[in-house]
Image 1 (cartoon, rainbow, N blue to C red):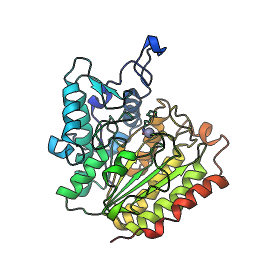
Image 2: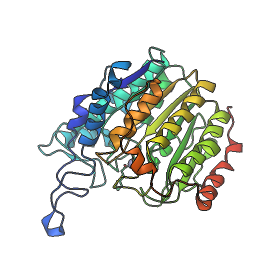
Image 3: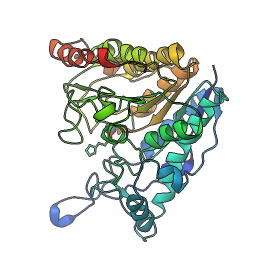
Length: 370
Ligand code: 3YP
Ligand code: ZN
């Protein structure tokens, strides 16, 4: 198995400002502190991949900047122009919601993230690697056609999927979003499109507010091709395992995608400050095995993971390391935090978690490979 890998130092230079969530504002009582989305978490993941030796087994895919035309396959000219304009300001700007700041030159880093997702899809579609992990930053899955939000500027996954369809001869694509927050931007990009199945496994009504209920199923010709699995807060490895087995695997088997792209956030882990789930690295390994098996079944193994959220600088690197080691089939060092997280209570599947999964599982019968 050859596994592609993308990282660029500039992803670690994405400047999220000096407020922990909202910009520092003494009058509002907001003290300066590193942003929860400080890029060091992702830089630390990259450095663990290097120091552990896993990097030596991966095929480095060169990054590239997405062109305006590529970004415009998903986003409006007004959004792209606003980001470009604010990117030229001495202190940068904001993706669109007031708590997603970027520094001077932020456009170039965001375009590099989207372009690197494209580069990984090209490498996997062209078979220069079997599968791949694009460790990009800023993330993308909340970004809507006309605005960024939730730390996302451009929707890296959506831009890469549209590129695969426009340039690489691929029609049916499945997006599996296991970031703990709802993949609303990706859902919106493909809501009326039955050629892209979007599956979002997330914490029920976490972020964005009131987004991603199981009743959101797409619209028009795309009805049935958005699948939401909102899990109750407090879901652990058992709940995630059941969601993978009862919904994600059968939905992918029914859809038979030619390419699977994962929006890979690690913020469902039991140490994350921006969500209330409990999972350990073994759940990310199981999710990875689930999408690998599905990709083998219908897509010739073609599978691309693109980084989204994850805010524990301590645990994200290990979740990422084990995920990529699974993709590559390479043994690596053990997760030293696993005994702590997996040893805590809350990993048994609870009845209310099973009910949540079963509500989504009932919708799988409407999916076909048409
Ligand atoms: C944005 C503000 C509060 C929660 C946060 C979510 C960002 C994220 O990781 N999205 O996937
Ligand atoms: Zn997230």
